Amino acid sequence: MKNRNFYILIGSIILGIAVFWLTVYAVITLDVNLFQSDKIIIIKGEGISNEYTISLDELKSDKYIQVVDKEFKLVNSGEYEYHIIYSGTSLWSILEVENLLIQSPEELNFQFWGRDAYHSPKPINLSIAQNNPNLVILAYEENGHPLFETGPIRSVIDDTIIPLGEYSFQYSVQKLATIIIE
Amino acid sequence: MKDQDNKVSEEYRETGFILNIKKITNLDLLYSTIIGVLGGIISSLIPFSLLIKVWYPLTGGTQLVSGHHVIWASIIYGLTKKKPNVFLTMFSKGLLEFLFGDPWGLLIIFVNLMEAFFLSLGFFIMEKIGEGETKLGWAIAGGLGNFFQAPFFWVVNQRWYLHWSLWILAFIFAFVSGMLIAGLLGRTVKNYLIKAGVPTTF
Image 1: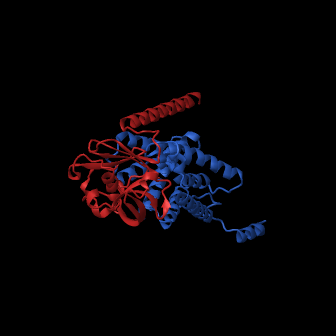
Image 2: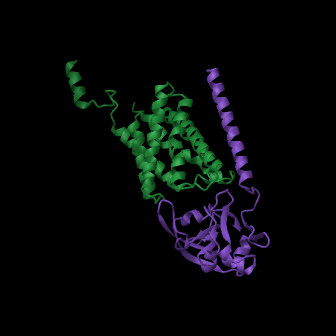
Image 3: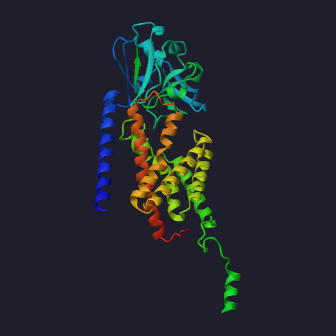
């Protein structure tokens, strides 16, 4: 019995150590900033002049195009279709107002990263955001209520403009932290 | 004496329960449906994942509480010791989750039945090696019961683009959660229910 309990203890310790180091490895490899405030979004990458930080309050200001209570169609990888009402700020309007781009949108791609290291599957061409400013948003409200569990900010791209073969739900990154443009 | 025996046999009809035959009794059906419905409501409406999201930073961490989906099946197995009841409970639970508008639709019933299958398999193996009533046996059976939904959902979600370490961590968390919640907590709850006077059917 003593041997059995000893083996269980050793197994538990090995498992704990494996989980700890895998977590550390993931945080370092994926460049997760554990201390970034959830009310801040960082826009960075080789496609913009300077790293730009925007707060939730700034995001909601009239400085940028506000998309209010608009129904978005999202499709997940199981081909289930959702129609959800979001309010948020147009991504393109932020880039345009702050004059962040150093190249034309056709030459640039953007990708969303969440605070939990989840990211959208592929970088998408920025011209999609330019041509559809109201369909690529940084949402802060869902069905009229502030985002709670999945927020305070999440990216939303309507399914009608998503590249063929991609699922719009995978691009709807909850707990949005960073937008990489390059 | 014979008259008395006849009287007793008129009053009481012998059933599988009395005869120690492992058939499903009405009590089994009642337990399975009540616990299944309870599990379905709790699983659908209570966001247990919030318990994890406040302190664990990476995606997949919510698997650490996923064992609560399977605890109902391990409790029912403890009370009845019949594997069909595990399936019945998880079917009731899946049906409730579906009716409450689960994002996965009918697929959620399949997932519940899959969890029931692997939990039953876990208990079957543990009983074969003499660990059917030990904490270790319950932990491993619970871990097996909860583990396979994680790779299933990650594959169905096509999360190929996520880093491999996140995949492994999520799977480890699923197994650990099954061990702790479905296995050990399930066994404790079952023991307290029996101690409190809940009749078993085995």
